[in-house]
Length: 335
Image 1 (tube, one colour):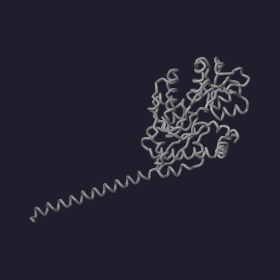
Image 2: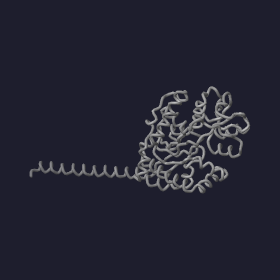
Image 3: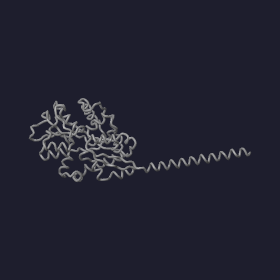
Image 4: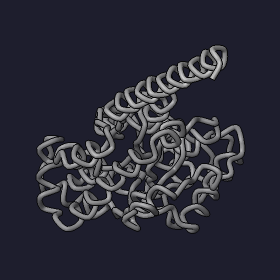
């Protein structure tokens, strides 16, 4: 071998060593980065909507922690006052998963807010009631014309009220809507500042049980589905975390159904309410844990169309565009 060829071969060998070393260095750097990413804990923000919820039990029992540990995640809990507040939290990325009644969910969809419906928690046929005083001279919904009605605007109870008014040939403009949160509306009702309220539990069961109110019946049953919702970006980036939360929630729903007495005691302690009252409320929950069915989707679409026609929402909604059952279906299959 000539000196020149020897130098050339030596140069090639050095280059190969350098390149090889570079690849080793790059590979080591990649492994370090992957290791750091693997250990990074992702925060999932869980928002508890107002009222009594399976989410309360999920939080208090602490069983979600182990499921989240497996996917390098941890839960941060918050409690918000009603659907509109949940929508604000989802939009501001302060909530990643929560649940909504039909009113807030449909209004959020009409506004193009970044969330999807990922499961059904209740069909909600016994969720809402319109209440009047027993001696008010208001025997039915038709008698509400010209009356003051307390209800939080944009909630499932607001939509329920609008639907009942329509059943009796009335519009919102035929009554005076007073925008009050549920607790404020109940207090205003008791003090006589409003003639009626459209409300949820625990207020309706409490007022009915104390004989302070009577429920005004609809002509036809009105379903008000409660759906589980996820912030779109979070669901896309962290599907395994969404499934972990749903796995914990599904197990909690089953526990709540099987142990109504213990669930009632837990709720009573959290909300400082009588256990007997909680048991009465439980009868109205109609808890489920399932994908959003065609029947529920059709009911939600009917509600969306009604809200658009009555200008409670400003844009039409195709409800199924905001449904993603893949997460709950995967959990129910044990995948």
